[in-house]
Amino acid sequence: MTRSIWKSTDPKNNFPSLNEHINTEIAIIGGGITGVTTAYLLAKSGKKVVLLEAGTISGGTTGDSTGNLYAMVDKRLHHIQSKWDEETAANVARSRGEAVDLVEELVNKYQIDCSFKRVPWYLFSETDQKDETIEKEIAAAANYRLKVEELQELPVPVKVSKAIKVEGQAQFNPAAFVRGLAEKIDDGNCQIYENSEVYHIQKEEELVLSTITGTVTAKKVILATHTPKGIYGLQTALYPYREYAIAAKLNSGDFPDGIYWDTEADFHTSMRTYSKGGDNFVLVLGGHHKVGQEDDYSRFFRKLEQQARKYFDVSEISYEWSAQHYKPADGLPYIGESSDDNIYIATGFSTDGLTYGVLSAMILDDLLNGRKNEWSDLYKASRFTPVKSAKNFINENLNVAKQYIKDLPGKAEAGSFDEIAAGQGKVVEVDNEKWAVFKDDTGQVHCQSAVCTHMDCIVDWNDAEKSWDCPCHGSRFKATGEVIEGPAFSPLDKRSMNPKK
Image (cartoon, rainbow, N blue to C red; front, side):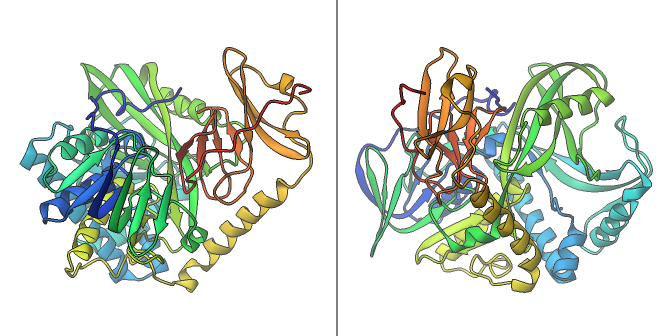
């Protein structure tokens, strides 16, 4: 099984599970950086809050992230400027910078042991074919009060044609930060429950959130779940992708602090360092693809290892993992009240989720306290931007439509259960129905419907992470059908094994 370096290093909080029926002012679903920071700010302001986490605090996407914090964005500030305008790009940089400042403030205030430090951010091209990207970012960053320096070489052993350096960005252990902050939340105003998965929201005069062993009735709900749970029109403007990471232990070599991004189109990567227990690691991240739309998921880990060994004296690959992100149609996240009254969302962070998660908390805290927020209109969840969204909207939704068409009744991945190796899964057609069939290491067969419980797309087997991934809207399920993440509320429907198969 894959796991991140962050999830391997920090103790759990051990908050209780929900085993009662309670009332509150605001309910938050999701215990990552967005949910916990929002809960902290709202409780500090005097609001009564209940936070429900399906697993453990920081055990989802936050614990699978890079640990990088920066004012820039993965699509580059010059891209935001060209799609929107110079003022919008400047506001994106300033708002994200303020979110990084808040993380530093909280770390210092509570002495959270999360390895927070300010570091420079680098963007570099390996060939002159990508120099134009660097030049555009230099011009853009210079306009947005960022300390910019142009370089011809970097303090790491990589080939460089042109580079940019921006001081004052940051790195930390994201899981340690979120767990540490959760312990500092005002428990007189906020109750936190782990292992309390919400499987239904009843939308009446008040909102009722149901778990297996309890309910929470709230006036307002925040979906801090990376993508909204359930069915929302906004999901046609959110596009799920996965990215991969490894932590390679080094035999020797000095890797200076910093966030290093390259601009190579075929396999864009980022790199950073982290020290743990006296060992030095280089983290290499990259490998970008639509969820559930690959034939060989493991190849991304192999490519990252190749990249690490190309430049560094690697002893072993100690950790490997992947994370999901959702690209917004017009390049900006959606933060604020959703199309459902009194349900608030924070989504569409792309690969910039740690900083945007904290920024979302700042915006939601102001909105729910009736205060004006400088950035709320910029990221408004209900905005309508057809011109800025058109190209991505058309291309991505054509892609979703193709996933439905290709999975009409017809040839499946396997003709019988016997074709499935131990530890693997395949889609098998049984009596004109597609089943997601997994054979565990003991040879026991686990059968469930291959139809995603979100919007009926056929799931795909992820060989690297032993999961069923939906290629339409990004829901992911364990090999045995339980929900891992995504908009789906319900697990895959169980099926009884056909003896003839």
